Image (cartoon, rainbow, N blue to C red; front, side, top):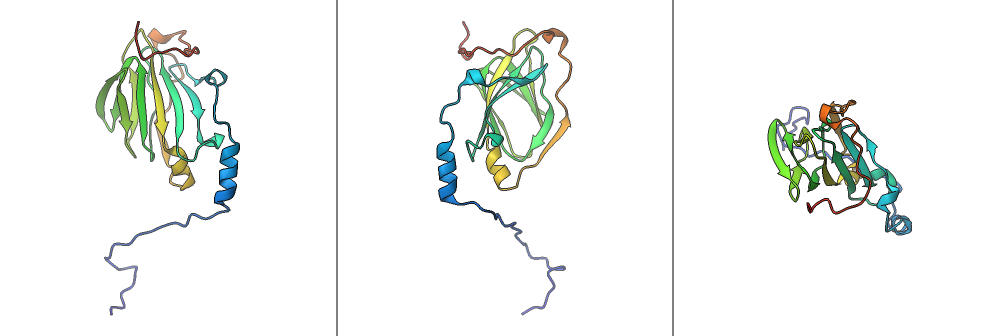
Length: 184
């Protein structure tokens, strides 16, 4: 048997941080069952802008779900989002409009009915390619689970623009719930 020091070892090692705390399944089920089962979209307002607007239906701070974060992103005419990266994956179901993503320097085009997948640790940015019409996406993330496991890392590379695009001056996020996925 070798008396090799772990400081000089060439063996693969697995590092695991303990997940510890007062978590109790019975208490957590009681808490989750006391949470609202239906949230009215009309009561949830858009934030941010003036190019990209967000409407968060279920997010980690709500405590409604341990697994997912659900929100709508609305991109004004010619808009772009912040450029950023995060550990958790995200799926963007495109409700209406046409645009594209830049993931780690590669462009991916999308239109209504498509799903854009943002993989773990991907630096990405979202763009509305239409200079006249807005675009909208339903976004699903596993962010709460990553936060619970203390594995959340997010970095902003470029902030959301603070000025509207020339073609998007005066644009406001659409507040009415309509079927944006099916054009007239």
